[in-house]
View 1 (cartoon, helix red, strand yellow):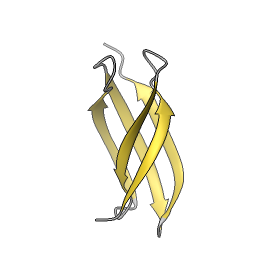
View 2: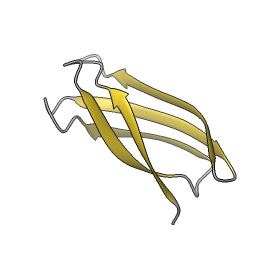
View 3: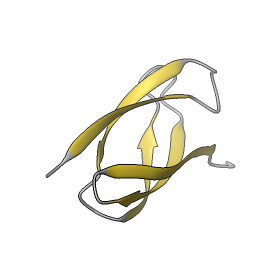
View 4: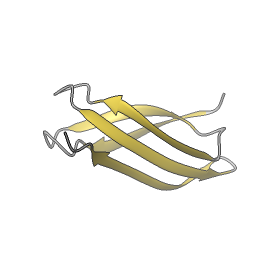
Length: 62
């Protein structure tokens, strides 16, 4: 598994958080809770080789 630490802003609380992304898989779409406010964030990203080419973190409407 090839990982990359990536920093982004939580769409709920506005805090900067980091996640370890598994960049060995070309496309991922999953839900992970914010480590600060615990709200669910939809994480989507695409990779090409060892490069992250797109990343989105969006709120889940509840």
